[in-house]
Image (cartoon, rainbow, N blue to C red; front, top):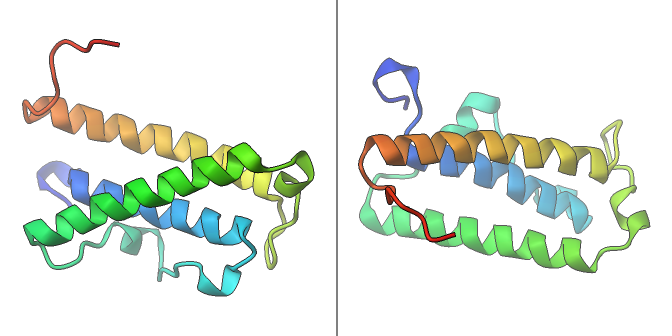
Length: 126
């Protein structure tokens, strides 16, 4: 699953980020029975069958989950974020802080890989 040199591909990184964002979303919604499961952290990088259609679906699902997280967080009250996660010894807000750092780290990897592949615009307008 890892590319040469031990680095994950962009798609693998997106799958990994998506796993943890979906898990947080399900936990926030109180749907822990529906949260994604993984054998271990390495398995969260696992790709579906590598087709263009599956890559499109992975991206669509990531954007959907990310937007849904933004919507629910924008509407949430402080007490919503300080709820204990069932079966865990911490609150949603602690997990959200960890998720933000986690996503930033892996998105940085995606940007770096995109630049190495020449797929990142050299000049940004923002």
